[in-house]
Every structure is written in structure tokens, then in C-alpha cells.
Amino acid sequence: MQELTGTKEKIFDAAVDLFSKHGYNGASIRKIAYGAGIKESSIYNHFAGKEEILNCIFRYFQEGMQTQRAKEDDLAYELEFMAPRELFRLLFIRYLKNRNPRIDKIATIILAEQYTNPIARDFVQRYMLREPADYYEALLKTLAAKERIRGDINLRIAAEELNYGFLGIIFEIVHSVQEGRDGAAVMEKLSNHVDFVFERLEKPAR
Image 1 (cartoon, rainbow, N blue to C red):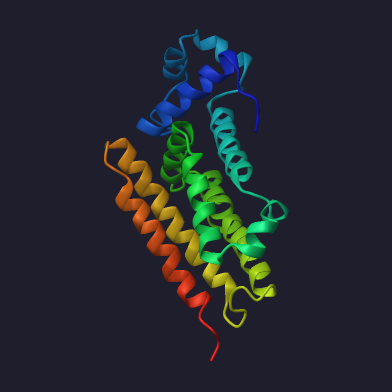
Image 2 (image 1 turned 135 degrees about the vertical axis):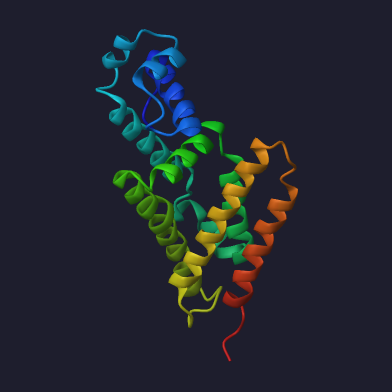
């Protein structure tokens, strides 16, 4: 992931905090500088302007998602021996355990900005919807090739179902943390979601 240290990190975090609370248009360079505890002119030593800060935030989120995603080669044992539904349950739980407040705030920014910012809209489509589904589909195809799950159904649809459900669960987890609620009920929903999809994937073909 891109390196954020010193003053640049302070600017980044101040912008993330302000954008998540007030939106991109509701946060000025002056407010970002105040939040970072620096002079307004100092921001331009690190960023060309507010739009570059936003693009940096998007890149950070993208890299964070990709870094947390285990490569298929690293899952060789799990793909061979772990029950398919347990493998996906494990992947989702690992992701949730590796979440951090910065990523949660950035997700809020991206989802809010997609309605007015074409870069954010493209980001949602590419990195929150399409790319994760591609990743899950590749794992499902590997499992089908190993005859661990059915290969006679549309695995793309199954991958998208897993991803859409997982995104909803992520948002529920973020809300429960923000509101100080116990996340146990959401984790149960995660488990039920994985079971529901894999009951169809693991059912023998007639």
C-alpha cells in the first residue's frame, strides 16, 4: 500500500474524517488543514489540491482491499481439504477481522460520492462489485474443477450473490461498530448467507 507518514498522513486522515462526515463538497482545504493542525499552504507541499487527496483516498482503499485478499496459490491447502463453505466463511471473517476505522470511513465516502463523482461511481462498479466477484468466481471454478462443488450451475451468479451479500454485511458491521452494538447478530447473518449459497452449490446434480 502507498506509504503515508508524517504530515501527509495527517492531511490524509483529516480529509478522510471530514469527507466521511460532511461529504467531499462540504470540506474545504482550509478545514482539512485545520484538522491536520497545519497551515493551509502546507497542504500543497504534499497534494496538488482536494481532488488529488480524494484520488489518494480511493487508491488507498483499492490497495487495502487487494492486499487483504488471499491469492489462490496461498489457499492451495484450503481449496483441497477445507469444506467449500467453510473456506468462504474463513475468507469473509479474515476480511472483517482486518478492517480498520480508516477503511470504514473511506467506504462511507466512496458510497456517498458515487452519485456525484464519476470516479467514485466507476470505483464502486470496478473494485467493490466486479473485481471481488471475479475473485470469488475464480475460486469457485477451481473448486468445481476439483469436484468439490457443482459445476453445472452458473458460478458467476453464485460469485455475485456471495459478493452482494458480503457487501451488505460489511455495511451492517460498520454501522453496529459506529453505534456501539454487538456484532454477533451480523456475524450470524454472514454464516447464514454462506450456508444459503453453498447449499445450492454443494447439492449433487440430479
